[in-house]
Length: 286
Image (tube, rainbow, N blue to C red; front, side, top):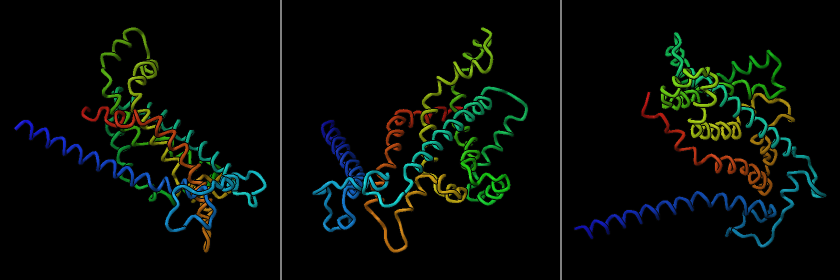
């Protein structure tokens, strides 16, 4: 009986292992094709059968989108869009983490009047789609003459309700005894927050930093609506330069996409060890 059970468990594990490997290969194939197409001439991108390993490496695709060398015949402003996306991603991530950490700690540890009602009001914002507030935001930012700046993409991201909720749950898991001991030793709330509570919720901060950066990096609708000046465009908008009404430069699109995913891989690889742990901290308390 025991031998049959071990064989059954082995077969089940083998089945799920092969299933995971198969799904992983299916997910990797588009990235391999993207990299392969970025190193080809336009005429060879759509050849059938697909040449996964090109017979040549046409690096001029990268030079063209970055406006390097003599092959440049048009300024795509891709480098400027890259800089804009990095700037907005870093600013939005830092602002969201700072404000959410302060608000989450206040909701978790400070018993002030109306805290529960205020927290519920914050949570109700999660039920309002961003598209529903698009027109009011556009009218507001236009009235303040901010559509020629990056402020329309920064100000709404300062307060992230989902981040406040997750950090509140993380701060609840911090023992109150540690806070009380620090207060007895003469520490103030800011000292307790910065030196005791914040180090204990690092996994949650790492997970939220990954989510916030990727959300800002991949944002398309807001930059499309609010940024009227091409000098302010981000990467999702800049990628449209290679797509025309009758002709799409797939080799340039794939080269641009390869450069675009580099920060995504860096951020995800750096934050993956915090991701699952950070999102589950405090999920059974409070």
